[in-house]
Length: 397
Image 1 (tube, rainbow, N blue to C red):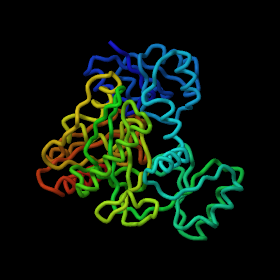
Image 2 (cartoon, one colour; image 1 turned 45 degrees about the vertical axis):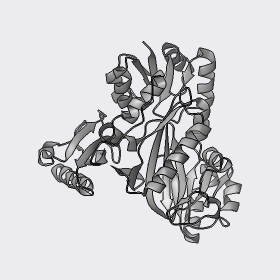
Image 3 (cartoon, rainbow, N blue to C red; image 1 turned 180 degrees about the horizontal axis):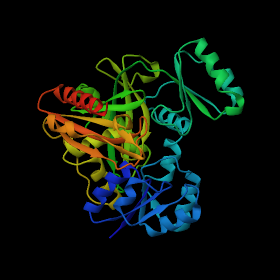
Image 4 (cartoon, rainbow, N blue to C red; image 1 turned 90 degrees about the vertical axis):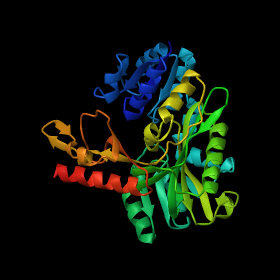
């Protein structure tokens, strides 16, 4: 029986553990937070800092293979742990080196002729001051590392925005940033590829995504994109997984736009241009929907790759599905306790699943759970999700 170690004790690791246990593996978790929800899933859990080499070494030594649901761990530290313990981490620490730094990620895309927006890198405050007046507006400034759900990002539309940014982002506050062309997004989509140790890969259906305030709001399948565009996205996603030599999962996030770019002439379909936004070498928020909408989930596919079990080409189940995030905004907080009032669920037969992550404290915009709506009619799965959200918020008030 293999023991799979998971760096991170949140919802992604928790759902992955269900699949690993199903296939006969043991699961161990490592997380700094003593109240990490996944600690309840296994007696093999370690609480420790991401910089605690000795405790991480103990964790690695216990495991046959290590993976992660949390990417912001020092790759130098991981390389040392792999060397000292002889244990493998999938996807590899070299993959993390690329995907946890936006500049390395964009450079990888450009060097491999994969569709990417125009970008520039500022490794000093002086670089930044020189780049800002010359980079075509509008653009987005992002910290090169860290940041998620819109954190560490600034949108620049005009000279006034540049001046405001320079006044707040002083030399004393400087961290490496990347400046990216702003894409006029028509559609957002994600494609999840599972790839095993022999280099065989399978591709999940294309998931359509909608974000609000930089946080994933809805994921829906089947995709509304044309078949030609979906085929193109899958080709690009598989190519990226192969180029990175992924073992496990790689999620590729896409922007689809009518905005033309001379460098993207090879990545157009049905009048649209395709851009890769970013990678996630792990289970992805949008992939929650695969638990209900597909005959195999992203977690099952990842578990199979980690355990060197045969992969299975995912297929969509009949009907229309929508996954919606449940944020802490919807929880009722009384004293030190937070809870979600689900009494209205009985009025929404289209909501076929609610999955709560077991986080003890509800915070604004914190992902606390998700739900799945289903219909045999197009658009009704989205309408049902909106009705359910509305009722949940009314129950809170």
